[in-house]
Image 1 (cartoon, rainbow, N blue to C red):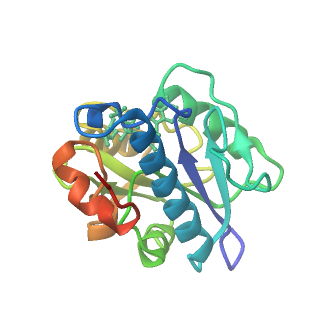
Image 2: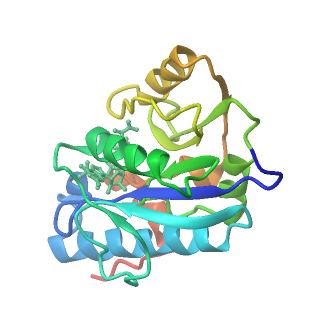
Length: 203
Ligand SMILES: Nc1nc2c(ncn2[C@@H]2O[C@H](COP(=O)(O)OP(=O)(O)OP(=O)(O)O)[C@@H](O)[C@H]2O)c(=O)[nH]1
Ligand SMILES: O=C(O)[C@H](O)COP(=O)(O)O
């Protein structure tokens, strides 16, 4: 590994009109789209500001109107785990591949550049996991490459525990990162209070 490791951020994003379906009882379809776009913009600009992150890549069906300069890896259409597996395969084989890949959810309105730098600074041969506020889901993963090129994404129920098992399977250490910015994803209507960081709901 070079003296200054190369770190990339990978952000999975569903297509327009698909995201945040669990908020349908509280927000209209245009409101959900506006929220998804605002949170994506926040996460992308936070990655741009993070000292250690040199490139940000999206995986999904579209850029949601973001600058065409941001690389987009296509989505095979079989859900989050397949989309991330496809993107990791492309990135791990790239000629300019990074030394570490941070996979970060696009629904983190309280995320700060320091949160990404913490993920970037995980020790060599360690996978860092940032759980959600319940301690069970996974909001970010920091994967060393090439050591974690074969990492199998296990998003779904109890994904944080499954991702720890996956690190063990690969013979890698695990570091758990707890921070407000990384814990507060927006899944349920009761989480919306945190979305006020990036989005105002007007009625
Ligand atoms: N590319 C891609 N991204 C996905 C997919 N499923 C989820 N994501 C993204 O993964 C992150 C975490 O997903 P969730 O917290 O479940 O968000 P969501 O899917 O918009 O929310 P719900 O529709 O309520 O489940 C968000 O950035 C989503 O946009 C998928 O199939 N493909
Ligand atoms: O494994 C997870 O953490 C979920 O599938 C994705 O996160 P969510 O709880 O934010 O939907």
